[in-house]
Image: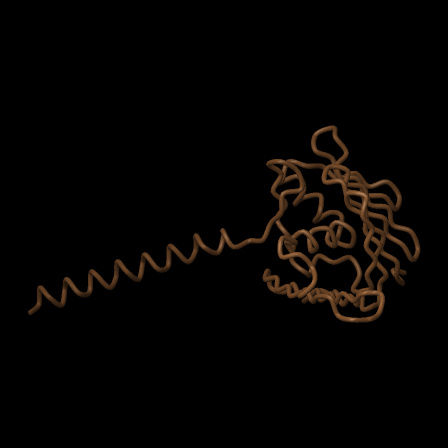
Length: 189
């Protein structure tokens, strides 16, 4: 009887240790990331890294492969969460994105399922998050960030891959590597 209790205890202890170790490993794997360039894995920053909280309407014009798209959005982003609701030109809801506590939820009936919301969050962070924290995360991905005035440039070695120009009321984002651009208009002051 004692041997059975001892064997059961050892078995349960091994299972317990296995669970603890596997949970610790899994937590590292669940950090959200995107590839900004081949092999350049940019880990998304926490919402606390935002430069300045915003709660505003934005007009978005985007171009990809000679196609233009126009959206309106309501963006609420602060130290605890980022929520974006997209609308078409008639005001009909097109999708909702939420990012908080390292978790993204995205729902849309009209946007393609292939659209990975992590890339939307990454682009938003590149535009509006703290430059020192961005620089560190980009360097960990093997990329570099150059800031000159209101312009942010992201390089993969010497190649310019992303360029962001911020002006009062407007942000221009150009992804040279992936071939898309968009302009955000809003009260960014």
